[in-house]
Image (tube, rainbow, N blue to C red; front, side):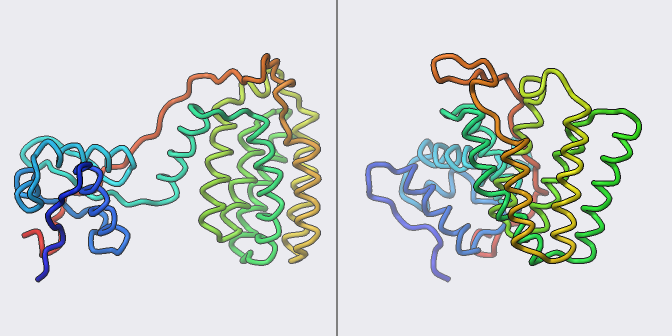
Length: 266
């Protein structure tokens, strides 16, 4: 069987090796849970040093493609890349990049109306039941005089799932997660009246989705974001065009079970 990895002659050895491994992940030769050869074995196979192999592993680990486990049963394992992986990466970008809350609002205005349209087109009976349950839960909180923004944001999570578009789901989930973590800054004085108005808007959006009216769903969501979802930097007391970012927890990585890799590595 042809070797998966070949000699590397270019100067940036670690990057080249990381690129070879990534290509094997992309074409499904390497699958989640597969264990890569040891540093020593891979260095010999690729005619390079263990230092370069170690650096390549670090590159892949940083990109969320590889998990390095220590100990007797340790090694380098391929990680499953899913929505959570993308959401965590986007979350880091929101916190560390030159991103303001107004940028987040603009993103929502562009994406969420289209998500509502897709939800109206793709919803199933199960989806409708989930959306309705979220709305009913929000209504119960209102009836009890409780303000719970997480319950309102949950509506947007479920609509993203209903769109059936994994790219949009990852983006919206990362945005909503970021808003949830920063809610004390965004909404320091909770107002039950806003909760009530949010709830009314959600009911209108749900009705359009339930009826399969794509244009009405798009229109209602756009109106909702314009009315309640836009956050300007001025609203947050920002000075000099920069938004104050609170410290939020970093992403967590789920460890796969240690399994033997493809036959080519045995």
